[in-house]
Amino acid sequence: MERALRASRVVTFVYFVLNGMLLGMWVVQIPAVEERVGISHAALGGFLVLLGAGAFAGMQVGGRLSDRLGARAVVPLAGVLCSATLVLPALAHQPWTLGAALLVFGFGNGTLDVSMNAHAVQVEKAYERPVMSAFHATFSVGGVLAALAGAAAVGIGWGPAATLGTAAGIGVITALASARALLPAGSTDPADDAEGRPVGEKRAVASRIWLLAVLALLVMLCEGAANDWSVLHLKTVLDAPESTAAFAYGTYAAAMTAGRLLADRTAARFGPVAVLRYGAALAAVGITAVALSPWIWAALTGWALFGLGLSGCIPQLFSAAGHADPAAAGTNVSRVAGLGYIGMLAGPAVIGWLTHVTALNHTFLLLTLFCATAAAAAGILRPSPDRSRTVELTS
Image (tube, rainbow, N blue to C red; front, side):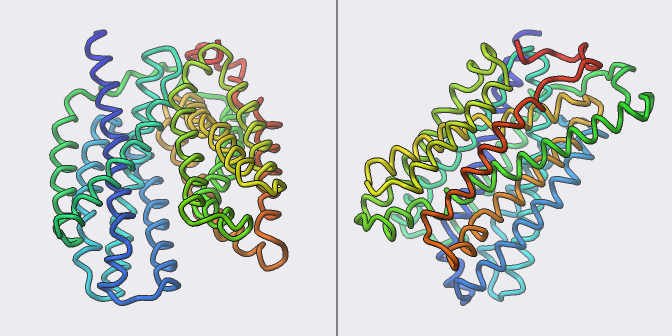
């Protein structure tokens, strides 16, 4: 049993890497696909909204299917779907075909995202200790692998179709080959059956899930803003050379990955409430330093603190959603992830709109407010007394 559990954890890492790699391979090919289809940057932004819409829909479907059929059945199918549809944007020759391709690829990505997180919750429950953050760290590793593979493909002269087609084939094989080690759906304790619970308890669980989702929206909005505006901040506000400005995102991403590798141990020792509360507070300090500092070195330090602080927040929110009601783990994770994903997409736009009324660095003070809100609301991660039989992760 211990060997099977260890194997299931390993293949969960594999699916997280796979998801990060597939999404990263698309990101690397965006400029080439944009040129091939012949669309402007502004039009591309609209098409990326379709990718997000497809992902949101896939999350909702993937969550419900994971609850009904079990994550073991859904994860490999979602992996195959996400992998197979990766090549579609590279085959598009017209704007409408690109839009359709991104909608379908987004749906596959969203389905895989939620189902693998639902399985991660299942693995975490079996381990009886926090393991979620490390899974999210390996998603970032997948993005790094995609960047390296994309650069290698460009170096040998491969076009988007060959590059994404090869990645799609590797993804399909990986998704199918890893399926056997996934955990089977566990039997549900009768007390975990939502149909048999008092109405008041069901409403309390539903309210808690939506509060977790709102916090995910705030945190992932911060992440989205950092992804798109960190480099521009150093370049346009602090007049940093382009080579130096690139370190803004680099320090943020490296600190986030390192933090996620450490967050499970921190959560096991101090509890998820502490990870969210002090992590969000640290992120607030970091982004405030970015917003107010006139020095490049201080801004880079601020971006690093921002990434480190945010690193453990989303894994704790996803984990709490999955454990709130084991019978509806997939659906609950899909709600939190779906609203969080909307925040991720909205972050760059919100900052962009605010630059019409104030300087770019001052817009980041809104992110300070969001982080402070997440820190103040961290107590929502405490399990409710009537769920005392659920696996305790707060230690």
